[in-house]
Amino acid sequence: MKMNENNAGLAAEKLAATFLANQGLNLVAQNYHCRFGEIDLIMRDANTLVFIEVRLRSNKQFGSAAASITPQKQQKLMLTAQHYLQQNPQKYACRFDVLLMDKVEISAITWLKNALEA
Image (tube, rainbow, N blue to C red; front, side, top):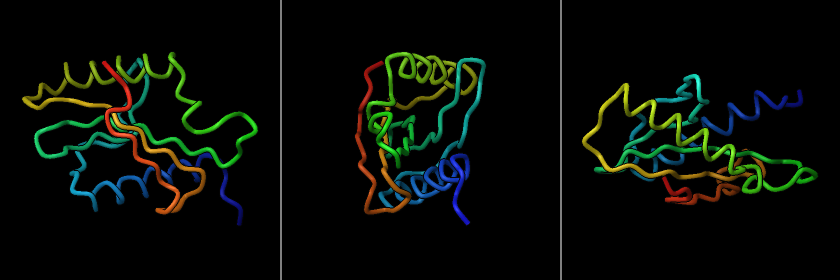
């Protein structure tokens, strides 16, 4: 059975969460939604709260996974993170990471730490 786009995205997020947990990060929230958008994963890396965007692009016809994070998408991520922080005040520093994949496999993960500037 071929994976549809939705199932592939969920599988990529699950793999990303496992990959990051193996790197020592702790899951705080998954698929955080608000009126501004969604953040795939929110994790804690020691004393840093990390907002993580997972991008899977198996078909490069429309550009790479990295190219799919447009300035508009970045703005939505930042507004969503601000909303999260207003609802859940933190004492931690924050950063935005991106996990890029061209297939749902650990070997296909590229982890960009501090990829977006708030």
